Amino acid sequence: MIRLFWYIILGTLGIYIAILFIPGVQINGEIYSFGWSKILFLSGLVLGLLNFFIKPIISLITFPLRILTLGLFSLAIEMGMVFIVDTVFPELIIPGLAGLFWTSIIVWLLGFAVPKKDKIKAIE
Image 1 (cartoon, rainbow, N blue to C red):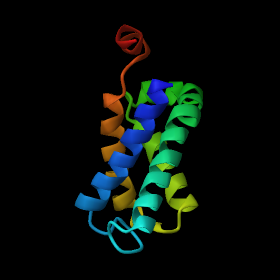
Image 2: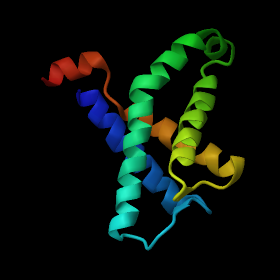
Image 3: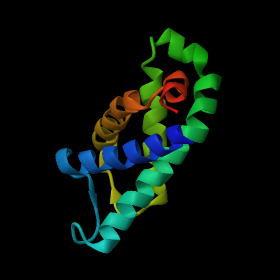
């Protein structure tokens, strides 16, 4: 349960950092309005849920590809997750493949901050 919370927080943070630093990535609406923050949180929530439930299944299926590419195929999986979020929320604008790539890089790197299962047991 704590890992799911981490995925949601880091998904939201990743999209927010992408909006701040990647040109063209934006949410339609006035910045820091209620609608803007609601779309940011909901897109982070969906991204966190996808990374928690769907990504492990896809990672298991594509294990041979991840071995052949020395783990870089995980970035392609992350790009797919971000693309799904971009498709679900039309208010979230991620222009082109470059914007999708750099947003995925941010979310992928933040994913390393999620504590592993054995570390969570030590915290509890």
